[in-house]
Image (cartoon, rainbow, N blue to C red; front, side, top):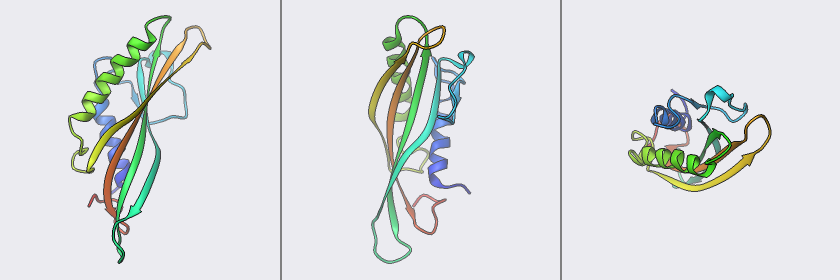
Length: 147
């Protein structure tokens, strides 16, 4: 079985696939820019994770705070902000439908949104970065199972 972190990321990809605006243009990467044919689209990736031991005796119970970033990409010459807000609304509402990520997590929270714009290329691209924190618990010797 995979690390709970990956299971949560997979849950988010599944949850966000099929939204009205981005459809099936959902990718598990931040390395490669999305091609024009894949826009509007979402790129989902792990940004960071903090771990805190909750017990003293091994195997220790660990409370983990995972930060996932969801990049929303749109292309065009106008309405960038409106398009990013529409995608953000769809993402936030879809994630709120199951804050436990299928029983893997204790909570899911949207913690930030940042927008950036690039005028390079034949049409400008807008990127909305949605920060999501997921809190989950594991035992230190069984990180593939939510506790």
